[in-house]
Image (cartoon, rainbow, N blue to C red; front, side, top):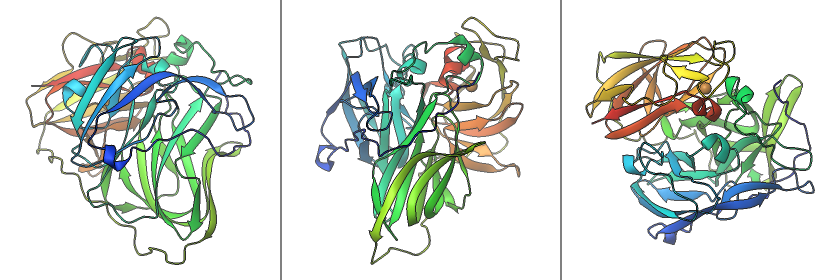
Length: 434
Ligand SMILES: [Cu+2]
C-alpha cells in the first residue's frame, strides 16, 4: 500500500542553509556529517532525529562560481561509512564519491578531501552515495550552486530543496529503510512532503530565480507554481536554448529545474493530488518593488559541452524486474539487460570523445529516473534531434527514451536508477571512458 501524504498546515521551515561567504570560496572548508535534529514537521510539532551536515539537514548550501575549484574536507561522524557524490558536476572521476568504483568508503571518524573544478554553471547538489537509499533518506544532502560568471539580474536567487519523509506522528523517521516491498515497487515514498525555500519573503514585482531540487529517494514530484509569472531557464543545471513556458512541472528524484519569473503574489508550491493541491511551501509576498527589473526572461549563457557526432552507435539498456516484473525478493529485484547489480565489466567502454546513442527501454511496471555520472546527455527529441541536456532522465513504465552522450570525461562512471531503493536492489551498471 502506497503511503499517502498527510495534509498538514505548513509553517515556514527553520532548516538552516549556510551560504559560504564569498571570501571563503578559495579556502578549504569542512563538511561534517553527523546526527542532527531537524524540524521536518511544522514548528510546534516534534522534531526529527536525522543525519545532516554541519548541523543541519539539508546541509549547507554551497555557492561557488563557474571556473572555480572547490576544495573541502568531508568529515564522517555518522557512525557508519559514507561518501559524498557531487551530482551533475562534470567532475574528476576520483572525486565522484562512489565507494567501490571511484574511492573507498570514508570510515566513521575519518576524513576524505574532495577537490575539483566546476566547469559548468548551474544548479547541482551533493548527497551521500554510500547506502544512499538509507543515508539520503536520513538527510545527508545539500545544494551546490555554481553561479554564472555574469549571472542574470534578479532580486532573489532562491534554492528550493524538495523532499518527502516517512514519519510517525511523534516525528520519528520510520525505520526499515531497506524494505524489500518498497524496493520492488516505487521505492520508499514518504507520508509528509515539503519544499524548503532559502528565502521566505519577497515583494510583488520582484524578479526571482528559483532553483528547484528534488532530493527525494523515490518520489516524482509534479509541481504547480502560483504567484509567479515565469519561465523555465535550465534543467539539471544546463541552460535551455531559450526560456520555456510551463503550466505544471515534474521532477524525478535528483532532477533540477531553474525558473526565472516576476512575483505577482505569494509564491506557492503545490503538489497536485487527486484530493486537491498539497501545499509544499509558500514564499510570502509583502510590499511592492517600486523599480521592477521587468523585460523578457533572459536566456542563460550556455555551458560549453561537446556536440554529439552524427550517426553514433546505438546501445540498448533494458530496465527489468520489480513487482509485476518477475523479480520480487532478494537483493536482485531490478536489473539492466538481465544483470542485477554491478558487473565486473562495464556496460560499455568508450574512447574519450566517443558519441553513443543509448536506448533506455523501460520493461517494468514502474517509472525510473536514470542518472549517468560525470556527464550530461541529450534527450533525443521526437524529431530525432539532440534535445535538452540532462544528467537524470525519467522513463515512464513501458516507455523508452533515447539519449545521446559524448563520453569525454575519462574514468569509471556509474549509470543507475535514482530511485535509490531500485539502485540498491540491482538497477545499476557502469561505463568506462579510457
Ligand atoms: Cu528505478
